[in-house]
Image 1 (cartoon, rainbow, N blue to C red):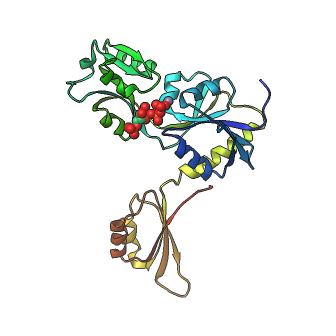
Image 2: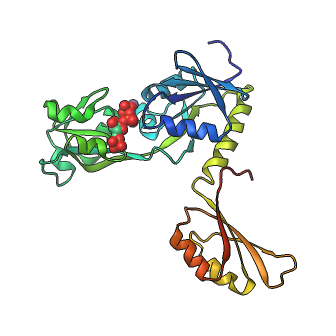
Image 3: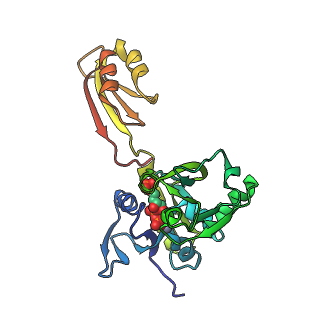
Length: 291
Ligand code: PRP
Ligand code: ZN
């Protein structure tokens, strides 16, 4: 394989993870020009390019050295087996579960209810491992896609597939009955990492990913108050942040308080903080952080 100087990241071309992946990379300051065939994104600025592929192909592409990094569900990584790959970061989006689902009308009282059934899945390794751990003998029917229609087609009695919102199951009159694996998007890399200049690009990317994920959903709260009210205000802050309290120039007894709150601050919480003595409250989104 030709030596490469630029870092290449494999990303799902279209699917559950695509939009949040592009959003993350954008927040990391990476800008791309898409090739005419839509398979490649050339990085503008940083030496980082993207390859847009089917998510199931991502572990293999990294294993073969075609890509250095990838963003993929932990479920896909676990199904692949993990050899020559390692997970660098959990990304906190694409949260879902690999679940067992059965037709609405089928009784289910536990894994033993699956004994002797045909279960359709795109995750045969994970399903076989789970069935074995449950001590259940069932037939695993491997399908590349459209697993959810197998029970209606009569090719399976149950399925084992990813569930995020649950909409796909509802649309197919299926009911989720057991969880095989919890999953979210992860940043994976070749193991060992490339030892050349690409290493710097990986470190830059990791710093920025951390700077984005660390404050995702956080809000910066700014307010003014009498110093006497600070304890009551701090007690009313959700998520127990440790605020910074600043003396206000020329206004003895008055302070300005700033706190990084881990979650959204709703009106009710804000009103409670106001009742504790705060005024001039401002809630600001936090985009990125650098320690
Ligand atoms: C998964 C799964 C379902 C859907 C479930 O597909 O196969 O089709 O997501 O999501 P829901 O509960 O929100 O309806 P995914 O996007 O991972 O793509 P793939 O299985 O085609 O690779
Ligand atoms: Zn897939």
